[in-house]
Length: 145
Length: 106
Figure 1: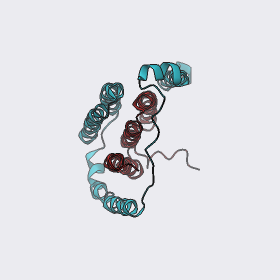
Figure 2: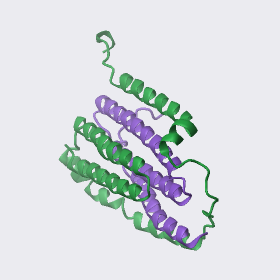
Figure 3: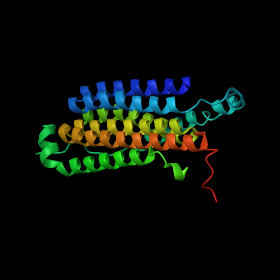
């Protein structure tokens, strides 16, 4: 399997784990659990499965592209410096001192009473994803081959 | 803006901006479809962090958590379907390099 891709997937899983700690510290424990179990676990498994079913690039092609592999990163420091300069010039005037919200802070009440349309959307999206996977991995019939 | 809230917002906002730049750069500069998906994941992480920080600062953590849970469900479905599309492309073309997936051009 492609070692560099696996390293990238492990890095993404570690990023998710760190993000889940930050989310937990920001007093959102349920979202932190979802982030840790789903994003750090399930999505890494999906990525590793996809990588294991594909083939790594041949050594000849890898050697021919070695120069351009690092050449694509020269623009990144300039973009970060430009974004930092823009942010230091522009002063955002976002007022977060809103009045205390009447909305309940219990996530269970919000999901089941306030945002119940989201639940319907989640079910529809999961069904669409399941049908898409069935169609994508459908074996062709013998006369269609 | 309240001083403490503004300071908290900017500390996390720097990380959100860095994650967004990394994800967008990864999507734009790579030719490997799996790396493109990894870049999309990093972008989704940035938006997750932004929603949670906004919920924390406005004292609406419950609402932010509900939205993040919805976002995570959508994220998983996108990753599964995109992974299936990548595998189908690999079976058909024997490559996932976007420079060689040019059959739909013209």
